[in-house]
Image 1: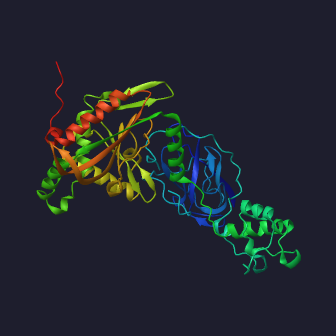
Image 2: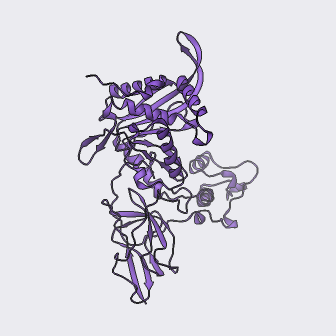
Length: 441
């Protein structure tokens, strides 16, 4: 028998390390070649790593949430003599699924985003290859307190000084649970000092620690980076979508029931592609490393999608070249794949502008966070019927707010407002959604 050390593989595109999302084996287990042994996540994708050889697992490096540098030992196998190939040579190519699957803690998950947004995040610093100490588990945090240590509430008036009452209030100590050692059961300062550790134990029993790893960690990092580095300019405008709703209902009734219901989202995407013909400065990616704005002719629309694993942003590519039903079908297909954790990496990257919608939970207004390295994001709020002044009289109209955010470094306030007004005009006169912009000679 001999030992074979499998090192963290190079997952491409400048990756220097990867985060452990979930182990599918443990020391002592016997695995076969190509069997899934661990799920890891880079700043760009989730990767399933198979076993490079057959053998017994001797040791593993890292717990869920830990990062392991590329080229550092990941797992050690005990194999029969002659079975081990040179390190990395026998390793099958890792497979890349839709996104990270949930690990054991319930809160583990991408990105937009946004939303993990699909934008590229800086690679993290390589972690040491030594195996870190595992974080305390939730079961340890919620272990039952010995019966003798549990404070028991007492009845009647609590006797103590005003100063001790203040100390107890500041320390979060319930005086009815403190046994007083003074005359007549009066609570002294020493009694508070004794009670403080017991109170802390009781408080700990009511909490659960959840480690932030995988997709949820990536979302947190990208959201923080976007909010910290991008000066957001928010702009909210209300839109009368009465005519748009009439068109939507008509189109839905004209289609077979099994073809799917048309929502506002495809109509907004269609209108947005027309508007961006006049506002190309909003269909831009910012390469911070080179200090360059990359303006795109094609419109690749990111659709912020809530999934059980967190916010993902699948991309409708070349939306400007698609028809309404093609856009609707593509949004539906991508959303289903994202929620089923089947979206490929290519389906989750490359957007040039993002549209987000909370649907029935849309509220009155929102302040969406830009899906970096994009410079604009459009948010759909809830559409409701309410009385408004329409053509000189009070009428009930269907109103929906558009909440948008722009990178104020590259999109001036005037241009941002003008773009949203142009989008509003298209949505309030939905026939114009299907008419390309006529440019002046």
